[in-house]
Length: 330
Ligand SMILES: Nc1ncnc2c1ncn2[C@@H]1O[C@H](COP(=O)(O)OP(=O)(O)O)[C@@H](O)[C@H]1O
Ligand SMILES: [Mg+2]
Image (cartoon, rainbow, N blue to C red; front, side, top):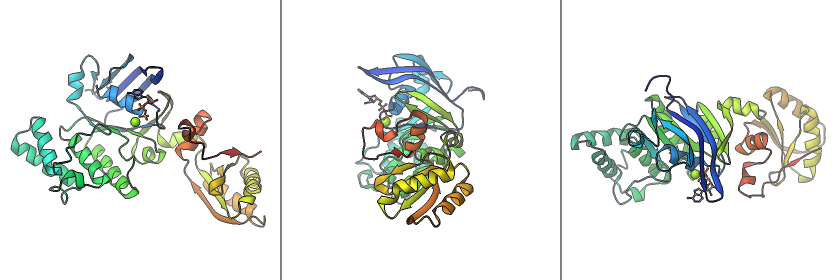
């Protein structure tokens, strides 16, 4: 593969399940040696895209290549160059971590000494040495995910697909998986990871595509994406819910931008393009207003806010979860 060949390219991929359009003209280009984040809510088409790219599913139309090979016409070549973890992880729960790695090593054609050596180095790399000789069914969620990652790297793939690698993990395990993914790119592997978390894409990805209803609705670096939707947010939590409307008006005027009210969190949120200036203005406006404030802070936007900025509806709307109300003050 030459330097100019992208590690992954998809053009106009379409795939329907009955009346559901899972992929609706998906285009992607992933540069070799980078981490690419495919970001979108539940049902956006992330897993379908990964399955097509990993040769597990035929698209209805469109084309894709991975490591320079066509996923349809050269599927065998693609398969020997990729690793996949996610919903299809194939770890045997009755075997220990080490036994799993040895078994897959032999399956992929390593001799006994080679498989042993590979298992040893992967156990070390994924911080599983202490658990190596325990059965995988006793592993924590984070350890299990790290074993999945280790197994997917036995063949030293040039391109690795990680489908929601940290969904369902506690924060500490999530950090450990992030560390493992960072270590991967240091070794030159191209990674395509899917995620529902803007934070995760922000932490790991060099470039991001936001997908919704099977097509890309925005792409770029995580930073560019965030500034496209207005950058950072300033949040004020009030002590008394009766103060929410007045606080929203005050803050909206202070930063000359619409405020959103998150009622059950007793929080008002406004865009903060310049963090210091927004904070100064807000504090000045609140000071002496008589409104009792619990907390003031500046933070990065959530996936919900990115979605609101890009599509006019929130990611949680997509899941018909109407619990989180969003009102815009006049
Ligand atoms: N095997 C299937 N049969 C029918 N519908 C499916 C199947 N797989 C996925 N879908 C539908 O296709 C859409 C995209 O699904 P998926 O690719 O799994 O999204 P994501 O991984 O982003 O959550 C969803 O509406 C989902 O319900
Ligand atoms: Mg999925």
